[in-house]
Image (tube, rainbow, N blue to C red; front, side, top):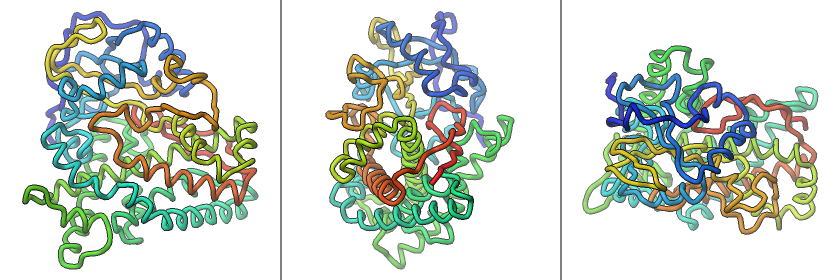
Length: 431
């Protein structure tokens, strides 16, 4: 595998770092509430701040001198919309990563125009509200299936079951695979490899050394690509009513997607479409457990209140905590001089607690409306394509769960260290 990093020369090695630590593994091993204390202090600076490179990175990059932290709501929205100044193509992780990994797993979220515009147009038809309504019955059926599974496992376990494995990760796994057209026999393996691709900070999944992590991640990418390319070949001769077929047949300006383009988007959808819903569901159940008054309010009119509740759960969870951009040229921003090639990292978990834009941001309020959270992005060309899918899934699952077992509670979650996904690795549910 190549050792070429996706970052270009980043910044001035003599530029002073801010004294707040948001680069260490120790910082990203604490809870969200603990990290928020640091982010609150950074927001008070009224500008962006410069920090050392991430400790224990995916790739040793001698040209990585650090990153700018964008922690306020308004600054994050501004950076998001200025896609000419702040690029996605070099990668969206805080860490430097091999260029092959970015190309093979991040698809359109790590692209810039004009390539991004063309690719997004090709795949966006699958995620229109009309298409989401079309598959809503299937989503609701899968929600019933996974709650059945949770209840069955809890009955066998004396009233307790492992919520993440037996419920939270199963719903998006089935829904994404239904959409893509992945056969039942391949779903568990695809889900296992997805967890590797989001779990690069977890020694249990990828090992302890940098070499072990990268090797295991590339194995997961190869396995996922092979599955997708096999399915794409089958759909060319035997089209089905699924997303793989739509991608195989999609055409813009007389061009079709290559196998590698289809496989990279398959990787992205498997990761982003599965893990964001998984994390929101897990953090959501824990939030309902910690705030019984909010649960009671929701149960007072579940059908009428679930929509606003889902928006607040997504804000509260903020399942994707960071996205990186890279400066395309020297530019001044909020009084700071950003250098071409600098990493500029947007902290969604901080912006969603910014009380200058979200009233009582540190309180869980399932009735919050309007709810200007930016868990699906701050606008611009990279706004989350699957936001309606995520909302449909969360509404279906919490409706089914709170109807069937309204007093279900969550035990203490085991969080996975990391700076990208807000991962609940394990969490008991008492049914």
